Every structure is written in structure tokens, then in C-alpha cells.
Image (cartoon, rainbow, N blue to C red; front, top):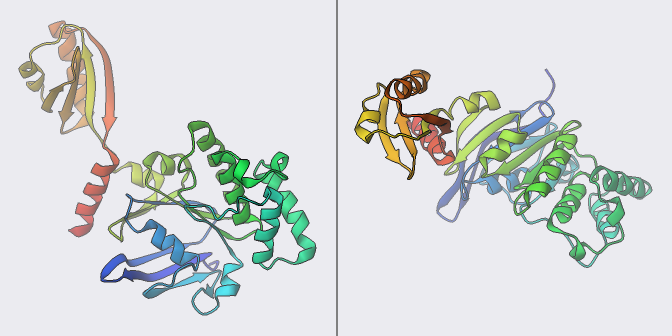
Length: 309
């Protein structure tokens, strides 16, 4: 079996009297995109900062390509690329000057720096801005520069903390595409509190809540926890709420105004069919059925409850 790219064992960290992270364990054995999902304050950034050697954990061990981050930090960090939540940009430098600086602080051989800079400029789609001051770039392009500095030394392991935070929809799509390209050659871990972000990008998901791991699995396994529990119907000739409640499997009905109603149910398998059949029989003139899914908060609550049992 190949040696894990990253191994985290018994990771715990305490700020003053509060434990920010408690007994986190996982291994990364192949390339791909791994998502660290959790609400704000869950401990995601703490885990990422520890994995990248920014802060030292209270307990536990981290190995990067078999190298102890605690015992041999300089050697281990050669394999790590990191984009913090606030990109470490120097606004008074041009893009090219900043990337040269990033290569130098990664202790790259001076003879390889120019080629490395040229390569990441192309990969990150910022070649045409190489001589522009970073302060004059849009938020999306500043984020690309941040990603470029994280991969300039060709690390095996890339950590991206909230990489699409603050970007507009078009910029988000562009950065997602860039992350997918990077993951073809290396292992990427990204943190986010946005459910759609992990669903759009990640092969494997960890969920963190209050510093503890409450879920670890594939995207398909995760999606099994996001089960439908409500549907919204539009009825031109809507009946009294009591008649909707009388449909077998319906447990609650909420009027949304006009002709729209939210129906809660215990089992999704038959309830839509029953609603449609009853609407036809009673001439309610059903014109729309939209199946809703649990909110991220509901998923967290459910997984946390299962974890505590």
C-alpha cells in the first residue's frame, strides 16, 4: 500500500480553556478534492492552520509524505501549498514580483524560479496581469494570485481555506475550474461553510461541528443524509388545508400565499403520487410540484445527533 500523502492522528487543539478541535483523525492516500465542511466557528480554519504548520497543535501528530510536521517542519512544508482565508498578498508588488517572492520563501532553486512563475501564471490564467500591481486586480484575480503562490513549488498537498469566499458567481465558477485542474496532479483540501461548494467540487467530505468530526465519506454517502422532507405545490383551485392534511403520509401543511403550499411528510416515496392522484380526483388543478431538501443546518443537527448516540 502506498504511503499516505497526509496522515492526521489524534489532532486536538485548545485556545485558553476552550477546545477548538477534538481528536481528529484521517488519511489522504490519493489525489482528488477533499472537502472540510462546517459552520463558521466549527474548527475548520484551526485544522487547516495546524496541517500547514502555521500553529502548533496541543495534541496529536501530522505527517506529510511520511515526514513529521512537528519534528521536521521545513522538510514537510516543501510538500505543502497553502491559501489562507485571507490571501497573503502584497498589494504594492506586481503579480510577477509577488510570485518570485513566493518561490523564494519556498526555498526554490533560483535557476527554476522564472520557469515556475511563468508556469503558474499560465495555469491560473493571469499571464496578462503579470506586471500589474496586485492592489489593482479584482477580487477574483487576486484569488487566482493567491492560488498561484500556493502551487508555485509544485507541492503534493494543497490546502485552500474558503477559496471562493467573497467572489461573484462567474468568479466562483472560474475558481472551481482552476481547483479541479490542480487536483488532477495533487491532493487538494478545501474548507467551506457552503454546502453547494462541496457538492460541486469534492470527491470526499468531512463534516466538522464544534471541533469534532461528525461525518467522513464520499459525496454519494453524504447526499444520502440530505433527504427530501418537504415539497411545495401550486394548486389553482386549492382546497382547505384540512383536506391536504388528510392525504396519507402528509404531516403538516403551510400556506405560502397565493396558490402555493409547503407540504411536510414522513416518507417521500408515495406522497407525491398521492398528492397528484388526489388533485386530479378533486379537481384542485395542480400545476407545480417542487421537492425540497433539508437545509445544511438540519443535516448538521441530524448528523450530530447520530454521532452522540
